[in-house]
Length: 125
Image (cartoon, rainbow, N blue to C red; front, side, top):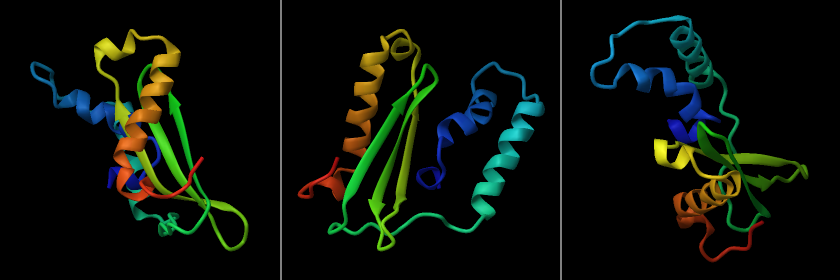
């Protein structure tokens, strides 16, 4: 369900940290907050549009020192752009030491690779 939740990697990070080797399992306020946020996303009405290769398509990416993310959006009949899918990925320690321009380019590369099955053969921005 990660592709349906914006910034899922960052939201789930407290859980990933609990699963590391030699780490005591301590459920703190950060874990509780993340759990409730994910639960709210999964229990709320779907807000994603169905991908249509004939619609105007935009790939929007972002990067931070924690991770990279992207939104695939398409123009709807009402003229507004609606998300079709989300992508996020946590950075490893080596990537976290890279410059911002590298991380922004990495976000673009990873998003295009992740959604290549939709994007190949269509025009997008």
